[in-house]
Image 1 (tube, helix red, strand yellow):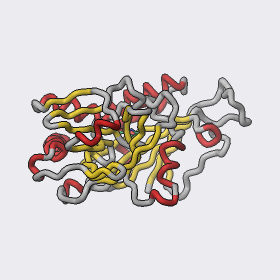
Image 2 (cartoon, protein in one colour; image 1 turned 90 degrees about the horizontal axis):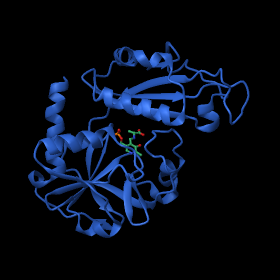
Image 3 (tube, protein in one colour; image 1 turned 60 degrees about the vertical axis):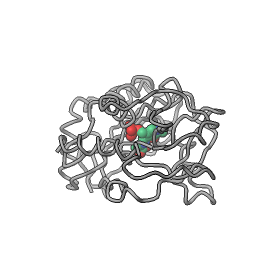
Image 4 (cartoon, helix red, strand yellow; image 1 turned 120 degrees about the vertical axis):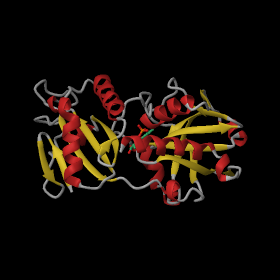
Length: 284
Ligand code: PDD
């Protein structure tokens, strides 16, 4: 397994980073996860744009190597060989001489990348597989969730409670308003209307969310960005999650509420997955 750190490709066993790196000390860093299919990056420009936005909001300087990001990622894909991969890129504000809340003006950002095999979405191979089990949780995160920051304690703590080992995803809500998952965006279907929370809510604007919004509209589906409340959940015919690594996956159960069943062809998540699969043929 190969990684990339500050200008060099280094094997996973040999790569080292200082504990004085602000990413380690303060979680002072941002990241992206970019999928590749058949050795081609999918929606690279959209991920790069969001990464630049995260850097700009946090005032982390743009590393020089960012201009060569595409060829560097292609080189990493080549070295790690799997035909479908998920590339992780993290940029921290860099290594300071001493721990200080205020970074030294001379500190240069750290750029780290690694990649793993992208697991095939199980709902592609077996669309009849039972959907995900998700649980609602009050959203305790900060108010700038449009930044893809590595400070993810509220996102991961729920999975580490003793009784939560069989939970696939957590759905964050602000009072009645449902925002998003801990690692995915959320879509709801009411009759033939597909709804996802708007960007004005505290969410990460998922690249996969935006892709499905655009493509489903183009394909003639009724799609709306609109808030969904907890009290609307029992009217939902379908709920799905989307992300760069999960693509699109259906939800079976929210807390104790089980979603209604339909014939496979009637599920909108399945129609959406078909759209993605067709588009990916063009990516190959
Ligand atoms: N997570 N919302 C949150 C909080 C996320 O962490 C993610 C992705 C998404 C979906 O974004 P996208 O479609 O751009 O992947 C939404 C990544 C995959 C992760 O943290 O590993």
